[in-house]
Length: 267
Image (cartoon, rainbow, N blue to C red):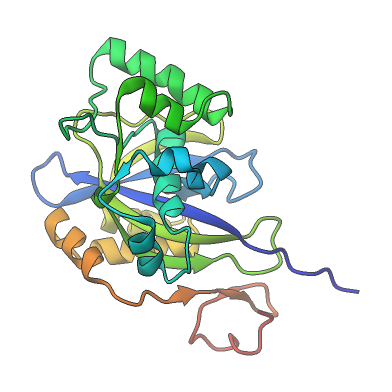
């Protein structure tokens, strides 16, 4: 008797970009996962993870600006609760990469380029990640709020059945705050690097970057653009973003919609 497929967990991922140091084009932040984790061991991913109950709390909603739950839910095509995906993307960016999308009362993005701020927020990061403190409590402590308008939703993927973990993931893209530096956590992630989207795709083809189809397709979308301005405008202009649900073929290959054997594979 076959096991019932796992129900995918709601999740959010954020693709962080910055202008290339050469002055031409832009780079994307890639995190390498530990070889000890269950999901994508050793693979290169964007910061992200499953939604947490705190992401949909009234406490955190009161600290959000630039987007309402009604607007967020409409954008995602869900009845309600859409705001939690934006919040989760910000929380995961902070927990996994140390990048915090938060503004002070003057609308200025928080800066972490001095030792005192870096150490204070690093301590917050550990406590939030370990569940000892909530993101909302940290924001209140520091007089900050979440400017959700800085993140654009651009893709929707569901992990195929058969694996140990399944996620129903919404993908966002955002420009990384300029006065912050990413730092992998040496737990789930063991390395990070800024890389041009086209270069990351080359490394994947050469077998140096292990990546799942959602990351590969996201990089292809990024690589279509020669500037951050073009990328963000394109992401914001997307309408009726389809859900992409890969399936596992009889030979074990991941099949995308439209590929031979997709319709015959188990959903």
